[in-house]
Amino acid sequence: MMKTTLKISLAAILSVAACWSTAQTVSAMRSSEVSAVDKAPEIQNYLGSKPGGQALIQRNYQQQPPLIPHKVDGFDDINAEENTCLDCHIHKEVRGQKIPQVKESHLVKPVNPAAPELHKSRWQCNSCHVPQVDAKPLVENIFKGNTAAK
View 1 (cartoon, one colour):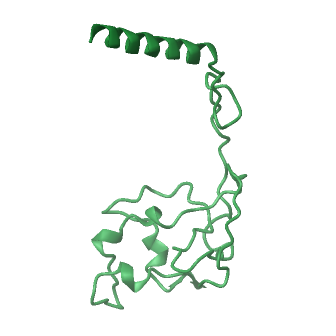
View 2: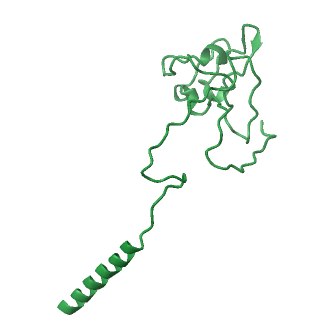
């Protein structure tokens, strides 16, 4: 029993030593050394200008939440009590402009057309609806969306 344990231990030590001597330099998938300091990405500006100044962004697939085609800089934080998005998007028209309205699926049922009310489970708009930046993709993307999606 003692000889078997000794042989197994010796074999384990020899195999670890063999692997140790042939170890290769580890590098990250980003083509730089693991020990290299990461650089923060450049801050990208949101596409578009103030709300209402640009066309809607075409969706890539069915059931995709609409993307925000305007800057959101300077908007107050969205919380359950205050939601700057609703200042415009709860109404069919703002200052004579037709704008996308919050869908009925986001409102308390039955919907009161005179004073629609956002359902409490839907107050965090930017969980699904996101502004866009003109940024270079981090990895190659060959996704072809269903551009006919509405």
